[in-house]
Image (cartoon, rainbow, N blue to C red):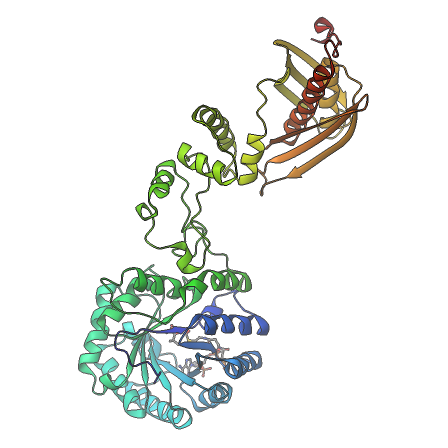
Amino acid sequence: MTNVTDQDRVVIFDTTLRDGEQSPGATMTHDEKLEIAELLDEMGVDIIEAGFPIASEGDFKAVSEIAERSKNSRICGLARANFADIDRCWEAVKHAEKNRIHTFIGTSPLHRAIPNLTMDEMADKIHETVTHARNLCENVQWSPMDATRTEWDYLCRVIEIAIKAGATTINIPDTVGYTAPVESADLIKRLIETVPGADEVVFATHCHNDLGMATANSLAAVAGGARQIECTINGLGERAGNTALEEVVMALRTRNDIMPWHTGIDTTKIMHISRRVATVAGFPVQFNKAIVGKNAFAHESGIHQDGMLKNRENFEIMRPEDIGLSGTSLPLGKHSGRAALRDKLETLGFEVGDNQLKDIFVRFKDLADRKKEVFDDDLIALMSLDDDDDRLQLVSMKVTCGTGGQAESTVELEFDGKDVIATEHGDGPVDATFKAIRAIYPNKAHLQLYQVHAVTEGTDAQATVSVRLEEDGMIATGQSANTDTVVASAKAYIHALNRLIMRREKAGPGADTREISYKDLT
Ligand SMILES: CC(=O)SCCNC(=O)CCNC(=O)[C@H](O)C(C)(C)COP(=O)(O)OP(=O)(O)OC[C@H]1O[C@@H](n2cnc3c(N)ncnc32)[C@H](O)[C@@H]1OP(=O)(O)O
Ligand SMILES: CC(C)C(=O)C(=O)O
């Protein structure tokens, strides 16, 4: 038995390293299993099912080492209903201060046909193997695999045999994710009421998610009297997975008013372990996964963001800090509104008045229409583009480039309110564009630096381009950000030219005396 006696305490049995690892492709290395076991132990998991020791030499070693290192958790191994499996399991888990042998056999009509045993033959096997396990270890869990498709009378009969043979925990697996909440609660309740000796053992629930009901079925089983939930981090596991640890734990915590049971899990460690399991198993967590999905504490739409800024509880039933996140995220995108934009700009250090906000909001929406998400760096880039007073403005541009020939760029600029167009060719689209700008605004400024930097992620990233020009000892730097690198380059170049113009003007009246021959250029 676990040392938990509190009637409202639900024991968390984590099987990420056994059932979770059974997901095709989720195999973990020895060191990764050790790392995850350590994290589970630190998080307060009561029982860690560390593996299936007879399955391979590697699994045996991993379970043995996890057993040796475990500090608080009870370490359990899985074994089929035969002496060899059980002995091997004991050899591995015996190193732990607290250990458990978990032995199982499929009891439904379909599963009884696998080893081709009659009901009586199987009953005898259960008696022998549980007795054997109990002779080795004082803590034995027995599972009638596919319990939810096992005949009621037979299920009661074999559970009674297992209890009499010394099992301390009876686990009721919904092996193929077939049950539903009402049935799950009712099954456990009736078993506890019916099977002789049921009050001497802990009943456990082990659900799979084939119909998306694993969490609901597990919680219903607890309502029916189960006091151990078997689960995995991120719901990793066979087919559609097992019950997700983070979901049952946070559901019990959040709705303790209607589910008055508690666990010993330090929930602030959830996010870290979720990320580690996703990484080592190579199973990314879906964005909208409950509790640990990227979007679980993120709000993009303006009405929600406004509501969140007024009172977090408007749209959040849990605090992100409770699962180890630093806070809610209000990602900015095309659905965001002014409230979130102002809030984000303020956290980035920009104080904006109402009129300025109105203007920035237009540019922000324009950018958001072109990008999935507007990142902090995008906003910083946007804020540094306050270029209304510039004498040179980009009106439009068109670039043709590719293999087999020079790039061609047609640039239309507005200079002191007049539109001018030039087309130039060059060694690549940027060279052609800079030549076209120089054709419109002749200058002998020397290009000292041209630098492109992708400030955000993905193929729709904003490129920030920096251009440094030097003319007659005067240096001016221009910057621009755009999802199109050539447009960003043109704007950065124009930005630098505008600064040169401004400097010259500041240097003295009539300093910029160049003339533009509009006709020649259009
Ligand atoms: C629902 C669950 O998650 S159950 C756990 C499932 N997990 C795994 O299977 C992962 C680890 N498994 C393995 O590494 C291998 O299957 C091993 C080492 C256990 C067995 O390998 P093999 O000896 O080659 O057998 P194989 O996998 O082909 O077939 C399983 C055998 O176990 C028997 N068996 C299955 N479950 C049980 C059980 N609970 N008790 C006794 N025997 C069982 C089957 O009848 C079959 O026996 P047979 O070979 O006499 O027909
Ligand atoms: C071994 C048992 C508990 C199991 O994993 C299942 O039935 O899903």
